[in-house]
Every structure is written in structure tokens, then in C-alpha cells.
Image (cartoon, rainbow, N blue to C red; front, side):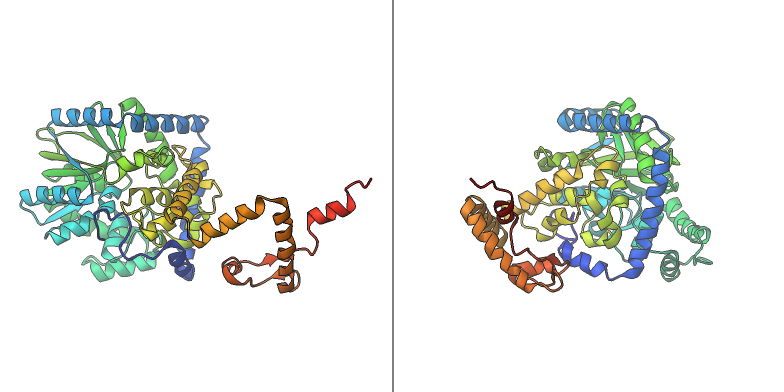
Length: 478
């Protein structure tokens, strides 16, 4: 990753090209189809258990919108509460500043290795790479993140980063990279090998780095929810804990947190509650880490907040429900998006967080959608992803200027449609395309039209237009 804001991966192709390559990987498609089908089926079942699910969604939306509207007030309240409980708050404007703060804190503890809880924010800023460049090794402790790290791979899912790998592939990675070789590719054997590998890291680590699912402004409490227990180990054993958190992850009070602790597990892992919900407020003598640092990360969020339509992406609670129902994601996988945030939410979040308006790869992401609306239907905080997608598409077109082929074509169409005679003349000229048809279908259009017929046929245009037919058969003659 490179640049000031490495939300997207350096050197990644635009989405259409990356998707075309991903579609040729049949194993990837089988892995994704099986995993997403299983997750969304289970999710539908646990959601159906609640009569008030829609009311919970509306409540979650309202809380998040209140936070975004009053973010300055809640952030100051959070800082005061964390400081009062013995923590230290750091403010980071961008990825570079956040990485520098964390590296300095780790160096101050005199260690060259840290353990990490799964964190989208640290992936967003390229923290592992920044630490490595500074002589510090970061050990991922989430099982899926560990698989990605040991395989020198990139994540492809928000919740299950290694969703593109099957059990045999994971076994081979473990046998190659870990001293504790798994006995087989059965889940218990893979988990046991990972447990033995990580246990030594947990017991020897002086510093842990975490993300945050939520932060309660009233009490300065940080919340991490996870399913494996690795987070609990990271958050209690090391002497120093450093949390990197996006500034939008706030909730005002514990009563508000209650809403999200119902929405998140059902939407993400299809569970009624999280197996492990860890909460800490500053430091407590004799219990847990002796030092706590909270790094509040902006990294494009303030700029996103200024967009009245796009800002709703900041409601996201990283549940990944939108990925699991998206027909585009299911066929291409997350790596094709070239971003830390894949899928529908990544298609609207990544382009807004990237600080380069001319980043072609980021600008291609809003087109990675069929606009079917399934993502909006399952989003637990009611982010209207299709609305934001079309909004960002319009911005991408405007950024190209008025002399692009698309802009010229639209201007020409406006001129034709602006006059009835010109419109009828264009219809007559267009009917000549029927000469290209075979068996009623046009297999190949010339010029720019070839982009349409590269992936679909076009129906042959009738010799007589509807307007001409109507004038001949339905208009009453005097």
C-alpha cells in the first residue's frame, strides 16, 4: 500500500478488469457461493425470529444519524470520559499520522512484536506495513486474518477475510508457515494448530493493538465483539493496549449500544448474540492492561460527512450482510474491488475515503453493482446503498469533464430528443441497424456500440417505428 490514504491497494486494476479475471477462477466462485449462501440463509432465519426487527433497523439508523449530526460534541465527550478513566486520546488526521502515533507508542514500550485483534481501521491505514517498515512485527490473532497473513494474501470479506479459501488450501498454508502442522483439513484440527501457534504470542506480548466496534461517549467505554476469544486474550493480557478507531464508531449511551448488540450479531454471523463482547473503560489497577491509548482516526471521514447523500455510508457497523446478498460480490469476490472495504459498502465507502479524486480504480467501484437493492434490504442501519451508488456515479462522470465520449453522446442525445422532427429522423436512421441482424438479433454493433454487444445481444430494430405505425393505423382521418 502506498500514498497518504491507502484505502485502496496500490496497483489494483479498475473493477471491470479485475472482475473479468476473477470470473475465470472457478474454485473461487465455488468457495464464495457456498459460503455466502450458508451465511445469508442462517441470517434470514435468526432475523425472522424478531417481530421488531424493522423497528430495530429504524432505531439503529436514527442513533447513527444523531451521532453524525453531532459528531463534534460526542467526540469531545468521549475524549473527556476516556481521559478521566486513565486513558490517553490521540487524534489522527490521516493514515500517515495514525501510523506514526502507533509506531511511536510501540517503540516506547521497547518491543518489536505486537498482537492484533481483527481491525478494519488498521487495515484501512496499512498499519501492519507501517509497523514492519519501522521494525515491528504485527501478529494477526483472528483466525481468518491469520490465514490471510500467513498466506501473503489479501482479505476478500469484511467479516470472513479468508472466505475465498477452502479447508484444503488453509491446511497447506498452515503446514508451510507454522511449526504446529494441522493433522488434517478438518476444522477442529485447523483451529487446534492455530491455537497452539497463537498461545505463545498471547503470553509473551507486551503490546496489543485493537480496533473498535463501538465506543460509548458517556462513559468512554470501548466495545469489541468477536467469536473466537482471541480478542479477549489481546485485550486483557498485554501491558499496553492501543485502539485505533474511526471517529464515526460512537454511540451516545449504553441504551443506544443495546440496539446495536441486537442488530450486529444477527446481521453478521447469524447469531443471536456475540460469543465474546469485551468492554473496557480506561485502565483499572490490577485488571487488564496498565496503559490504554485511543487513536481517533479521521482519514477522509470528515470530508465524507460533508456529502449529504454519501455520508450515510458512515452509519456502517461492518456487519457484511450486504456482501452476502450481492450477486456481483458472490461472483467476483472481494479482492476484485482492490480495496480494504469490498462489496456494496466498499463500493460507496472506499471512493469517499480515498483522497485522490482522479483515482480511477476507486472511481470504478460505484459501478460494481447491478442496483438490485438487496443490499439496502438487509442493511441493519438502513444505508440506501443504491442511492449512494448512483450519486457517486454521477460525481465520477462530472469529474471527467464535458468532453468525454459519454458526455458528448449524452449531449447529442439531448439535442435529438429536444425536437420531434430530429427524433423521428433518428428513428428512421436507427432502423437501418436491422441490416446487421441475424435471426432477429444483432450480435455485433460497430464503434462504441461494440461495448454493449461484447456481453449481450441487441434485438433487431423494427423497420417501422411505433409512431409511424400509430399514425397509419390509429390516427383518425378527417
